Image (cartoon, rainbow, N blue to C red; front, side, top):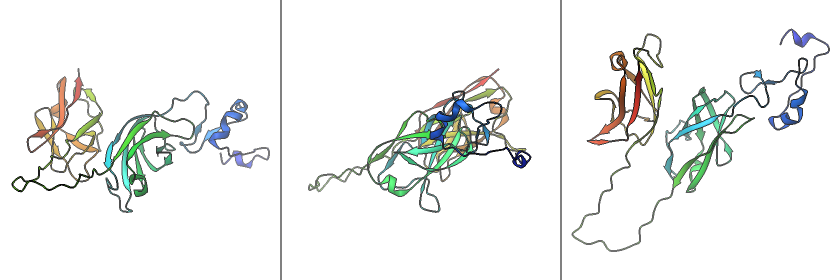
Amino acid sequence: VPELLHRPDLQVRFLDYADLPAHAAEADATHLFFDIDNGFVAYQPGQSAPPLLRAIAPTEVEAGRTFNLQPDGESALQAVAERATPGTSVVLAGHRLVTSYVNAERLTALVPPDLLRQPGRYPVYLDNGIDQSNRLELVIQGEEQAPLAAAPPAIAPAVLPSPAPTLLGLRPAGTKAGQGFNNEPFGPAMLVIDCTRAEPGATVMFGDVAVGVVGNPACPLSVPVAADLYSQPGAYEVYLVRDGEESNRLTFVVEQ
């Protein structure tokens, strides 16, 4: 590009994504289009697949409550995706959120407190400026008001258990026998678990072996997996357990 800028016949134009369909037919060997928001890659209309939103965490929150609280008071929404790019944004209820690109499969978006005040079911999707993903829902629950009534004098109010944690997905969902995954330099394999409502102190189980303890903030979880746990082919259940209560189970498959 620096060499081309010295050519007197070079013209550079900036187009909005909304204007691209009208100019797509102009692309040829002398009229080059580049997507500067998504890594300065060649723009090929109609040849790229839209992003896919696999999961969000959390999926349910209480009205007026924050989650994964950030220093500026905003909440951090985790998105598990496919084909995300540096220019991909998370959109909640029509509001484009400030989004951090981790990799093509993971994004983190900041949710202002104002968007969490009204109960309802709000669509969440990905937008890379050209294409949009499928829709998922973030449920904002309102506080239920119990009718006023005199409680029986000899009966104590019931204590409701907290909602059980839910595992949404594993990254990766499997490997080949003896083949590491998500390894840090000179470190062990790392399993990323997308989840909701995982309370600090819960134990992460890989088969019948405890591989970690949930910290704070909880989701998503990253736990080390020793090499001997994936050295043999098989299917290993991953789940959380705390005070005798278990989450749902997901299967990590080790192939031959």
